[in-house]
Length: 200
Image 1 (cartoon, one colour):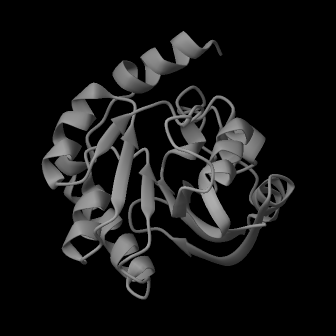
Image 2 (tube, one colour):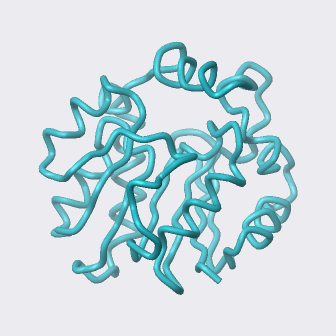
């Protein structure tokens, strides 16, 4: 898929607003509150693919101060910017606005499966994380539907279309510098895998 085609599809054809779906918004709240409760509030966090800012809102309400969002779609950025954190327009494949080792945590929910080159995105995540920084991912799993192949073009190189207890996905992470330390499954929104991995 060409980059222009990818950007048009993700910002127009498949544009959706999480904030307009109570179940999806609540799913974000459940995850962030559960996962970030024990995280020190002074750590620097980036939410890649922050969408309307549902995750940013929860992090703000939990007392995190040093948080930024990244989003590609202008309509989503408009909403996310109202939450008090800086939100940058960027493609997750190119986060060159941020220097090496900028963040303690990279958080990305229901985003990486949309990447046309998820390995390149993982390389960027690895680069912007501090040594031993943490990658927190939420992905559809198993991502088996045939109707979303174009929208979820990243599921094939990530192997989230393979129902093998996410072992193939963990191997992709390991091959790109991330050691999985925690994994859980959920189905509140849709079947998902929740992963935490350390930057090796």
